Image (cartoon, rainbow, N blue to C red; front, top):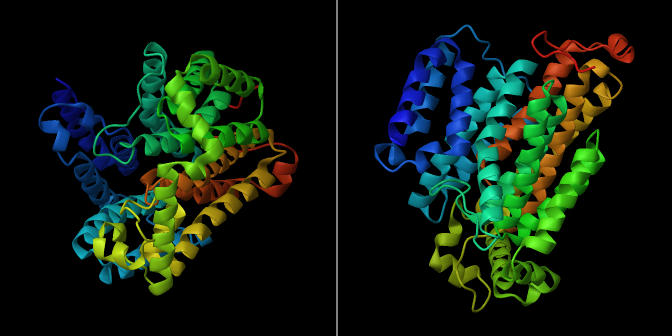
Length: 432
């Protein structure tokens, strides 16, 4: 039944996508983040839904009257450079077959990121994209939070199989990145029921992060909580959520969870921490000996490379850090581009915050830029201990940073902004 429902939704959306390509981007985002087909048990489980929607969206975009223009900015240039650089590193990759497969997946993701840069040109479309991301990943926040409460926190929470968020650490990362977007919707909705629903989702998502048993996720949750207090308006809900999640952690979660989290105090003594550090040393050694292009995607899968560049007695494993993974796989230029993307995205949001701070009609843009920054903080923090260097959500959020700035620059005018008047679309009424 689930298979038929997914098929009905996806195939039923195609005629609408052909008329309005941005609906295809929304559908692609839903399929990519939520992975609903991984919750089915029949033919839908391995069917290439994402690829089909991506192709239909590209075809619709080519033949539509939509503008195909991408504004030239530091972010768009860096995204293009990263696309090119990962292609070059793949040519020289140590694990050529594996690198090509991973590269193809990443390049497909970046292609749709560039489609995002073409199609999200106004507040309404940006708003709907945020909704799709929140619904897709917030589903696992709600589900995981309820499961954690009902089971007393005795079991680990995982994402759907064969997805970017299948691993508990990656799921915790994705949920931490989603929390700020939930908050954005919560403070900008005109409907009380939606605000209450988002507040509940915020709390249960925080509980779900605890339920992943991810130590990196817990650290990121603490950092994100502090960032939300600093960056958001109307802090009462955030303070209540922090208190409730904190009480859940220290009075409700079982002993095995507390014992696992307690290892953060002496992480250097745990086997998993030692293995992570060994993987970082491996990545650095690979980059030192292959400084320009690194070892290519999935270099850590090469036993011969581990014997050559790994610390003595190291156990071959994935490189658990987004930064060290990019360094080992894409070399020093790749790491510079990667960090440059994160920095340029932060700066873009800072410019939006500065431009809209005193404009009541543009509070939505001020809030969204603030929450995008918190999402970047979540990624930068949790990414220290995960392998999600090429997580599609990260790059779409990066695209949203520059798109938000483009929307503000194209519509807001300094004299009007100084008077506190914005140009909010009519179908997004201003809050009083």
